[in-house]
Amino acid sequence: MDNLNLLISGYLDDELTDDERERLATLLPADAESLDRFAYASFIHYQLLDWMGRQWVRDGATSAAGGWGEVCDAPDTYASGASLSLCPRPPTDTEVGTPNQWPVATARDRRPTGRRSRFWSVGALAASLLIAASLSLLAYRIASRPVIVGQLTNVTGSRWAGSRSDLTVGTLLQEGQELALVEGTALITFVSGAQLFVEAPATLRLDSAKEVQLESGRIAAKVPIPARGFTVTSSLARFVDLGTGFTLKLDAEKSFELHVFEGLVELQLDQRFGDAAERPLRVAEVRAVSFEVESGDVAPLHFEEGKKMPF
Image 1 (cartoon, one colour):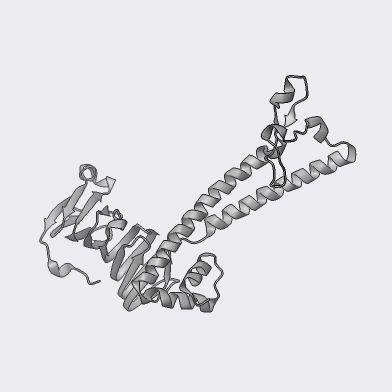
Image 2 (cartoon, helix red, strand yellow; image 1 turned 90 degrees about the vertical axis):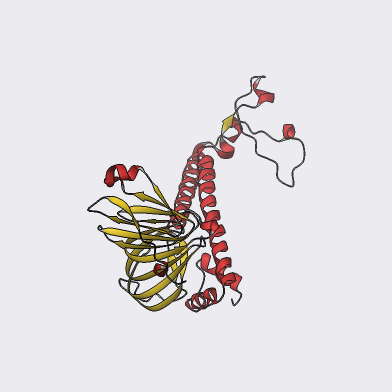
């Protein structure tokens, strides 16, 4: 399985060996095109799984409720006093005739009797339970499958805390994953196309391909047009990127500094800051602002080109 497409497909279907996973992690950061192919395949794959999960559960519920055995009126026979009939099924490839010629079995014809009736009832119940269990298992597998939101594409002298202290270039990052960078720097490339540069010490959580929860530290974001709306949330404010490049330094529960180098960032203070939170502020390029919890106000800050972080 040397072909990149096969490796990506195998990863998404959870069919790769350890050696193949390692090879995929080596190939992806080799060039931008490989990473783009992986991002596109991941998006299509998880969207398809989500749609299939909803569709199969809906179809399964319909089958359990009625299906071919549902009682319905047969217009051609009901008027003459015949009993209610079972809904007709579509013809198979080997059957001929028009819809009016399809065989319609009456409820009386289909009604089992005696011991066969009991066996039929038990069999039908077992089949229904099996279908329900299969649908539940399918829904569980789809819901529990990890969602890949990005990849670690560059590190310099990095050291990580916590259970994932072995993070290296090529590591695929999952939705909800928490990262604590103790030393060095790291670059995360998201499936959405956004890039996030992280400087230690910093703690953050990856909520999705377009949203990050920053606990503390200094980061920089570069957001292309397809990823517009990329958001950094914190306990003090939300920073909504409107197609920009910016840096953010957050001192947890104390203050933050925002420098916008390109485009526009919408700043939304947390609701606990009263009237100021009701007036979102848009910070344009070559502008900077700061915020102190003690004052509760956003203030202009001298813009410093040197605050820009490298990508």
